[in-house]
Image (cartoon, rainbow, N blue to C red; front, side, top):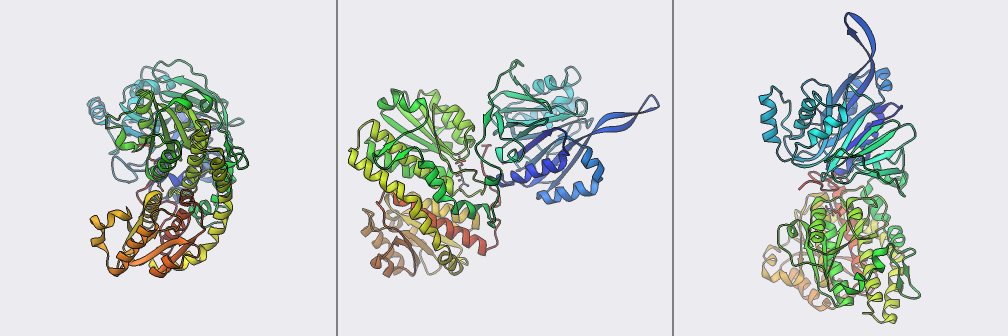
Length: 632
Ligand code: M6R
């Protein structure tokens, strides 16, 4: 989704904003732009030449950030660039209007004195645009966002700067995170948020920043405040003040310290973030378990009062809400929670949940799973579940994100920043966190014998090491990728707890390589998909021997071979029987069936990565995709 950066301070703003935008590239974008406030421009007042008038400069380009960098270099002299110490930047992911220079943000008013960058959708923009056109406003773009600049221009006729922005925001319906600048107050940025993705204020020394995501701030500060819905920040180099957008009254905000470092958000010598994040998984899983899981006693400790509340003993039902990869983690979670708690567990695609009238109430624990904590569908489902009386827990990777702020209880996955669009370490740590949740609840509700809790806790604590050994297979997987990268379609099959891994394996391949891939339960094959099998169809079968449906998977594999399908089998180390049926074998260590998804997904991530690399794809920023989907 679109990225926003804003800066008010004493350093040259242009390189700083460009650097911030580069840190947000992973969110996906198709154009980029800056609005810079140039101070001390000479101008004529009553025939006298005067200094100190500020001047708004807009430079924006379709395509990648390097296009914008070249434009800035050619349009702005070095000394001008160095003099400018305030501005805003944006990477746009097109919704309304093609990705062109004109439609790129920032957008300006008629008088070219106000500039805005916006994430979200102005739903009533057609209506507002007509009203503004009737008043003589000429529009330069096809975007919904441009109306905001014109609305502010109108309000500036009556109100001072920040109040004019607040009044303009009051006229729009829809979602926004927005930052605006104005020539008349060149040191004061105004940011606001209502739904349209995060907006974070960074507290620096003699400088204040705004960004849609923390990685853009890390090089400058790790002290941040997150804007909640209907809040605005009036930002000067001396610091921010916060207001309620609806009432204009001051709001006090707490400052949080970010644990992530700037280095964690760098590639660290890897060619892609995705590969770095795949390789980080043993560390990420271990961190997620650290200080929570005691392999000796089988005890799990979760941070926060919610986990000690009487509700934890009382609830009768669990609903898991998520999207994409997080949804597939939830599917695995259903197996664990049902098996060990003996409670009904629903898994809901959050975007569908909100448009039904789901049966959920005071006896429900709704667990929202999200890497970013900002996925709009997931957040709306969270609010819907809350409104129906459910208590909310979130398994989330970003502390301070909307999901963590709106939930009653938080279980943080300690994956560190995940930058690659394709989720990898977030997924395996979500599975680790779902295990923690299962063992914690089973412990406090006494649904598992202590010996079994201890056994599982021991097995879990061994996983990071087993995963590290598995990652050594990368060379072998690169060879397999070479053999299979020219196919146009893939099927992934699995049964039981391995079915979500088939879905995740297929998603990884399709989203970064653009090869068509589908995941199916093995049992579904005869109900249709088997018609697709021929010598041009590779089938990835996830068939660990420890699985209760192993024999059935062997049958599925036979059926694929009988129709000349190309069979890639994911089998336990040393399983000669399953291996004998396959064209290509990928081995994983033997672990209990319900732990095996945490390992079996890893070679599938690497396979997808290596195939995409062979095909020369933009692995970290696949076409049409954004890291967090903050608009519907
Ligand atoms: O941040 P979230 O976990 O809420 O994101 C959900 C999905 O958008 C995300 O998992 C998406 O499917 C990834 N691109 C998968 O690799």
